[in-house]
Amino acid sequence: MLQLQYIKDHTDEIISRLKIKNVADVEARIAEIISLDGQRRTLQKEADDVKAEQNRIAKEIGQLMKQGLRAEAEAAKSRTADLKVRERELTEQQQSVEADLNAKLISLPNAPHPSVPCGKSEADNVVVAEFGRKPDLPADALPHWELCAKYDIVDFELGNKITGAGFPVYKGKGARLQRALINFFLDEASKAGYTEVQPPLMVNEASGLGTGQLPDKEGQMYAIPLDGFYMIPTAEVPITNIYRNAIVREQQFPIRHAGYSECFRREAGSYGKDVRGLNRLHEFSKVEIVVIEHPDRSYERLEEMKHHVGGLLDKLGLPYHILKLCGGDISFTSAMTFDFEVWSAAQKRWLEVSSVSNFETFQANRMKLRFKSDDGKTQLCHTLNGSALALPRVVAALLENNQTPDGIVMPECLRPYLGFDMIN
Image (cartoon, rainbow, N blue to C red; front, side):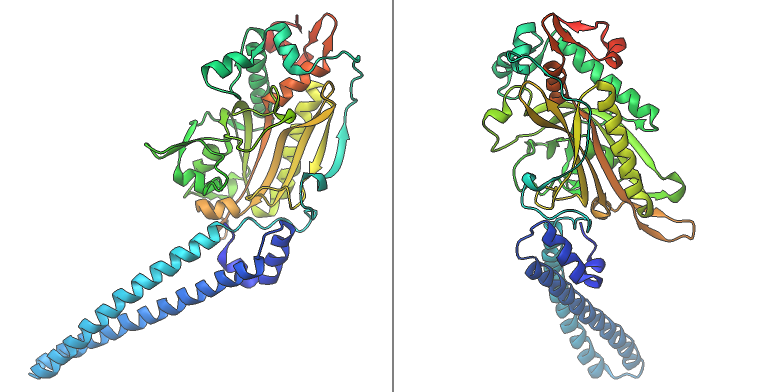
């Protein structure tokens, strides 16, 4: 959530930055927020004046009673009763305005960093770097879903029988490959200084609100209304919420965590050829990295996280490029995002495997995540997160790019985890 005081102090800047995200009616929305804050302050002042008047009259009543002026004291008590009624009215009005103000603030997306490029959709994202060599496959190279069937390593039909489309069953060496990638990613994160946590797969509403997944306007989260829980769309949600309503010390920065989890996404509206096989699932495995950092160093940390994700793809031998997302494609909560996409040789297309984002104070303000500096001042932290990595499309690219007439060659970095060199 954007800070109200910052909106008021830098109104033109906030409007300009939100226009990069193509926020509709942004001037009117900001004006309404500022107006509601003005109403709230006016009501608060009137309520304070009414309380002060009640206190003054209370002292006056005591003096009148001492002087034996009972009629005057009773008249003063009557005025106090009227003031109490007015105080209740003002409190109710103030609560209504505050609820409206909070709803307007909650619904306002994060302001992107000024360097985020303008654009309407993913077509306007900017390629900032490209690494690796795209493999040359024969004309009869198979897409990963056919390789999965050929070697019996992922069964999409069985998953459809058990649960539904988008819930595959990994079998034999396919299951081993999943486990190997998870352990490899976690070990690499540990080497890079991330403390591993294993978070819950369900969160409460406060956690979803804290990291910006709720209110869930697009209905992408799986809800469990009987218990008030939500299945997590990413481990970012429970890991970041470890620090909800917390005050950390400046000396703790950077706070780094990594965690593996299953992720659950409804992916409403997804259809067509781009969702075949492992390209888009409702349940998938992912290792997430989360950083809590001092505001002065968060963009330095963002670069460090990009380097970490790129290093994983280098070790896996996957060609990839890095995209700086434009305003029309960046998420509701993010101030800046870089996407990593790997080349799928058989499909001849790029597949997103990671998003690395800086949220600045947006999540911290919603979660009340603060730090105390050496001079004793308390201020909001910056939060960052990244996929390191999401498994399905990594697996798809590994299978397709490394296929040979004899089988699928596994990357050397995974062989100690797998116990085999090839899927055949």
